[in-house]
Every structure is written in C-alpha cells, then in structure tokens.
Image 1 (cartoon, rainbow, N blue to C red):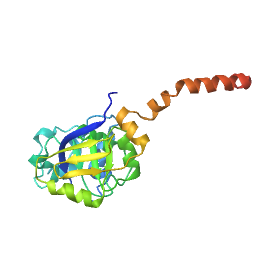
Image 2 (image 1 turned 135 degrees about the vertical axis):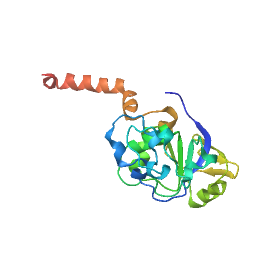
Image 3 (image 1 turned 180 degrees about the vertical axis):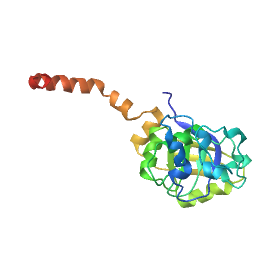
Length: 209
C-alpha cells in the first residue's frame, strides 16, 4: 500500500446535520457484499429523481438538481465538507465503500458517528473533525470550485480561506498514512506471535496434542 500523507482534491459541500448511513447508501443496495459497485448509488435517494435498485444503469437516470452534490462546481470532488453527526444510524460498512468509490478520500465534519468513523479508517477515508466555527468558514466556499488540502502529518486543513488545525490520534493517523487495517497491523507482529506460540507449546506441550 502506498504511503499517503497529503490528501488534496476538489471540495464538495453537503449542508446537512445527522446524515445517516441509510441516506449515504440506502438499504436496497445491501443485497451485495462486494466492496465495489456502490459509488454510483451513494446518496441515491437524494441524488436521483427515480428510485434506484442494485444493478441499474445510472448514466441515464434523472439527477435531482436540488441535491447539493449535483452542483456542477462539485463534480469530481475528492473531499466532502459536511456538518455534525455524519454517518449516524446503522453500522453498515457499505456506506464508506460507497463514499470511497464515489471518490472521497477525506470527510470534514463537526463530528462523526463512532462506528462509521472506524469504518472510514478501515477503508482509508480520513475522517477530519473541525470546530463548528471552522466548518462555517469552509462553507463560505460553497458554490465555488475549490481545492482543499488535508495534511495528515501536520494535522492541518488548508484552502483559500485559511488553515484549520485538527487533532487525530497517532494510531489513527498512522493507519491512514500507511494504509493499515487490523489484519495488516497484526501481521506486523507475526514474528512476536510465532515466538509466543513456540514458547507456549514448549512450556505446555500437552496443548499440541
């Protein structure tokens, strides 16, 4: 996995609190357990004027002109700026799968639902928490085509309205930078695990049968 210390991209703005995971990816798309194929259905009930179903060709579906992310200035967005309690509701990992395939590499909000935040880290989406005042400052950029840069090492969000600092634990930051999940973190300790197992069987040989 490549090292990722800086995330830079076009900003998309979703001016809503309490966006739950069913809004991010509606329940009818939960029939598939593949990690791909969900990006075109992200925010489906808000994004389109018709009802979406798994397997549909979304290229011909009518877009909802009133949905924030359908704004022309936000097309190709790689960073989402939103409000508080983003990702609340059920703990489905399909929601960050859909956001990642949509193109988002970082989410900036006042707060995140805890399980959703963990699922984002597992899927290498950076959940960045800023104060309400900082979020308000970013929202002054709405309706503009704006680039935002997230520096994970410096813990800073940079754009043309200023530099905003955020806090993230070393463990979470390093997981994002190095692209590590629970399995890869465990494998880094493989030699120590094997050493422990060998010593355990030497001291308790009856365990091996």
